[in-house]
Length: 476
Image (tube, rainbow, N blue to C red; front, top):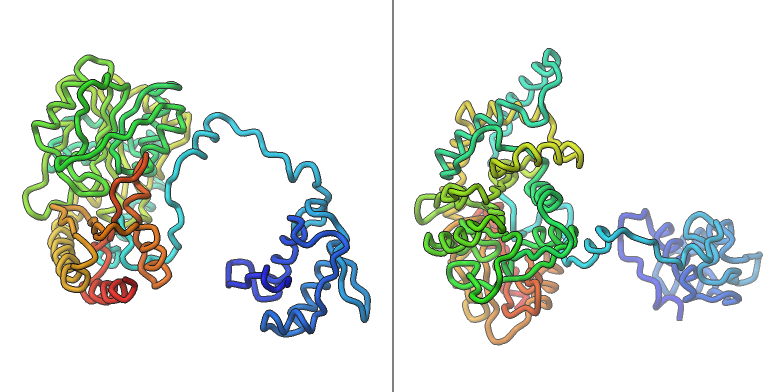
């Protein structure tokens, strides 16, 4: 029965008639409806699908115009091509080219081996992790900074890719708030933190180099390093984050999130940090410190960065403004080891990882005038209350199903599933109910040992959190 093969679920491809045309075209192009197959009459197919007869007639007429079917008055349409003879929507013959796989570069092939979840919808739904509350951002203040920067740009000559003023104010902020030791010349301004990882991989990694990453951890890091043909090894966590693995030779590069481990939120102790720094002192190992959500510490003062303890110039420090400000700003930064700063800046230009100069100038003013720190302090208070509220609601409504790990900071938390449940099925049910979460097992590099939900709390007001948890409870 042909109607059983047709799904008219709304999508971004027009109305019912366009969707039906597309589905039938796909069935013919893939051979599911073979050459010589008679399609149902327009009246019968309309009844089977629950649509109007005009909708089916339009689809048949369009397919006939494209050469997929032959239709005449009073007769059922008949498929006239073998699967693959015509490309969907164009009518051009592509029998051989359609079946041939494109030849990809080694870089692209390595990208295909990554498992980086990219399935989120464009609209932000509770309780999607990794987002702050952009409704609380001082947009009017930021708009004034942007306007002034745009006006000055008309009188400003072409300047450096990394704007001097932003590098200077950022160096001062990082020194006073995060304990980072760097000159302005060591700071590169990039479109994102992910761009920084791509730049590092392109600059220091060769095919076959060993890289350690946290497991579970940030999937974008593994994607960047695998794309450079590095051998990525996942290192398991304990209560202090990434473990030092005795017996393993030191790798070429170590990626870690010591101030707020992604996704668990665990904080790496000073002793553990020193242990990893000792690995790099031989001059053969680099460390990439991603200060993921490091600004948001709720139960104590923010912990100084690992980079500030590095006496041998072996640590890259990566950060972003998208969590504290708004994701639309699209600015991150990289503090480079002194010996690599000029090389990385040249590589930055060649790869094209360049941020808009007027946004850099506006951000420099936003930081220098104190707006950034004022907003950050306010968000710390707000997000702490939201974290506590989500923990209370989860324990009250889902305490028998979930075991909540309360992070000391950050904008998301892990709720582990009890009773041997797997997280992918739970995530599927929750997404269908309008709750966006991520499966903890999906962030593992190898075989996952833990199953749980990664839940964001920063972007949602307390009433919204309560409603979301009630919806979650109805799904278990």
